[in-house]
Length: 126
Image (cartoon, rainbow, N blue to C red; front, side):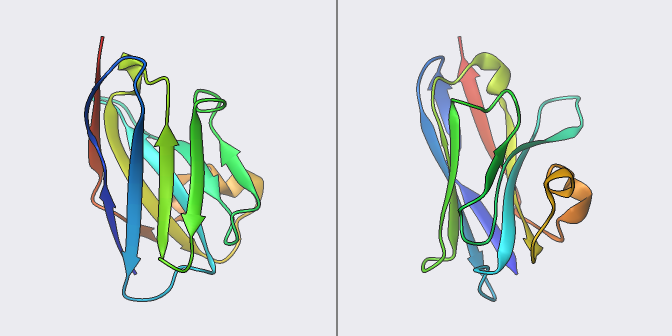
């Protein structure tokens, strides 16, 4: 599975942005999908995750109420809609995939995802 993240860019505080992650090579319709981010000088952290059918979603505390993960399995694509962006959301955002289901605690850890996109930079100015 190859993942290609896109949609990053420079926005002002309070604005919105939608990231996309397109999968190729094989279908990801049975994969757990996740978004992570890495801020400068920090460890990569979980942002949001989606079960294979999009019914179960999970969010980091900082993402709740502002970010929404969704997926279109027919298009092999997962999205991250981000609103009310803050300067502290500035980071490289990565999409990731795990073949199968992850229990809640596992879905928050990047250790459980086998496939990764190259990352897309989101910069939020104040």
